[in-house]
Image (tube, rainbow, N blue to C red; front, side, top):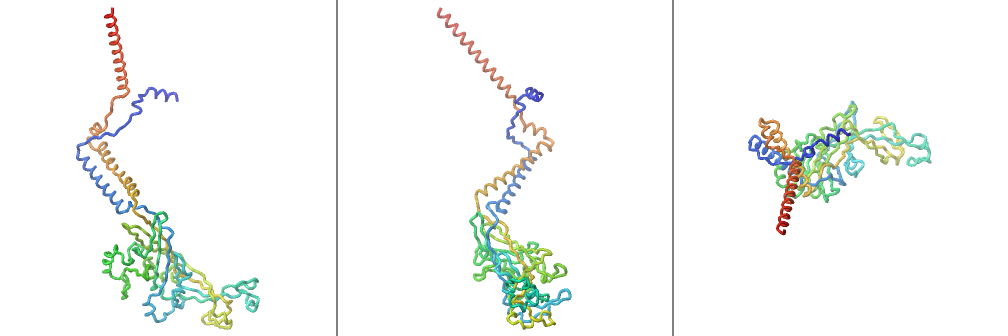
Length: 443
């Protein structure tokens, strides 16, 4: 420690604590000026691009607290034109009958927020007494079994069916968004939206009604050919919302195409998606385009996932226990149901997730982003300085012009102090001479 202190004492403190101050030197060399101003121009263009194109003038946040409502419907052309019954559905050497359910029967459970389950296959089993002798016990209540021997189980026999006409059915999606901090609330009926496939190609567009911002764009789209090879005029590649249908309407077939699979493709264990069920996650990604909020549907299939829902329904045959129930197709079996039937539903689970950013103009956000971006201009100076001081042949000359070392200010201060002392001594001597002269005159 003593050695360090002694070395510090021997150091010139002015030299040890040198202060570097910027100095402006105009270097008249085009080899430096051209690269510098070129870099400055490119960086300035990039700053404009990031601020304008990336909308750095907005204060943004993720949407929160929105709701999503879905509705399933059979199109009129299906109801009017599809009259014939289908042949049995075959899979792995097995045959399954088609059932022609309405959308109300297909969707279960109804009214889910942000989620829609569409039944594609259902297996039916009756609930029967675990102990067959309990059917003759009048004290057994199958709904509230107070005795162990009155418990119910599902029957060993079952029937499986596949649901017909799933692909042409339409889904109407209505969703709302709001900001957590920003005063933004919107419904999709007033916004422009797009449905994208797995490669982010637009396959369907949704236009708001009577919106002047999109009138020009809408006219340009009217000339597009239909995405699907069909004679139906409603397939135009886009949808214009109406007052009675404010949501986004698209066929399940379009959604499956966007997710890049079909219901009859193989999922797990050589079962098709129609038989096993599947899960589709649809990201609704919001963003601002100028002052307008737009969104995109981005569906994706969860690989190897299956989906099923269990439902208990009232057995209509329970009113007459003597009704014969043909549960085994060929063999007639006496109805032993306790009053319930279990529907094991497999189908398409569509889960909607709201993501993205919504925002509004904010002057402070613009200023902060401009200040952060303008700091990039120093890159141009750094590159040219390195070129000047370390690469060009005249780097020694540049350094002499750039760096200037001043005199030691301790010596300057010492010289000034000595000069002041000398001046003071001279003035004192002059004063003494004047005093002596005055005394001599008095004598």
